[in-house]
Image 1 (cartoon, rainbow, N blue to C red):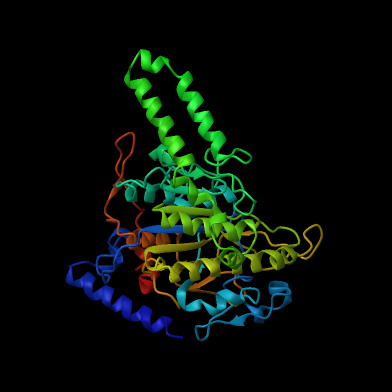
Image 2: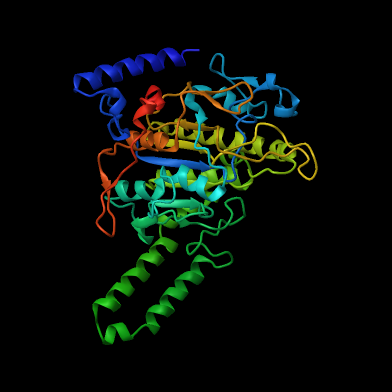
Length: 438
């Protein structure tokens, strides 16, 4: 497999660039990791597949068939991918064919086993407990990438629910919270909150708008900035509901063949909605994909969820590539942690897996990230990171780097504090392993 050679070359180049700049490698903070990297055109947007609850690395992207039944259970026959030497779950055949388009990070780690704190760590890159509530990546991207505006559609959208467990916008404030669409993209009508109302026709909305304008006479009799602002907000809302922008949520405008390719389920149609939103200039879409907290009957759930995941994500990668959007759109896929490698066969778990923050996997694609690589490794049973640990801050720093952010930037804080865009990597840990795929 070529990954290690490419990683070594990348590190040598990084070392040469660092030494030429008079830097000593062990003291290089995360914010300087991109200074010596080859320049690529910055990515424009991110689609995050948030596998809420924590998918098991052994059953998805880091199979361990030799570990035996107590670790693999029935998912003991991983399949070859398009990349020599790389195998993934037997239930991900379509993604196996596309392995050249994405890279796998098999050495994610943070050691946290609680949903709330693990989600916060993975989404913000910061450890909890220092008195600050940091913003999630989506809020930071919305802050920095939507300066030129995204029209009437919010720059940061969650399909279909907020990520939960923490405040996505943190100290940046409510302006940078995601718009949570609600509804179900797989329903006959995708009732996006505040934009689409099932059973209310366009004609009826127009009549409501006319009636509201006729009744709202106070603002005309007593003009003021407040009334003007209210009128402006109302007109923008109706423009979103009745104009072209709101049609982005109308998946019936897509061909049946396209919708079928994504899968006729909530996850598949959410992936399709994410593609449509990115096409309209939205800079961050998070597909909140629950159901991975599999304490009980893990394998029966995997037999349902993994094929659904395989179909939806493979369709998204394929569709973005065909439309020329994959190079400008980062796909980030994973959850807050992994699951216990050793299976809990006894009642009441009946083949379940618990929370596991020591080792887990993520997938990264598009936006200038190289495909076809594997970063890091776990031991023979998937219990410990054995090579190149990658911390949440490393992945977030890499994403920010591909988005073209100046990593020395700070975030605006209501109390005027100096908050770095991303926390520095532990100096003793050496360079970020993800430079190999940048």
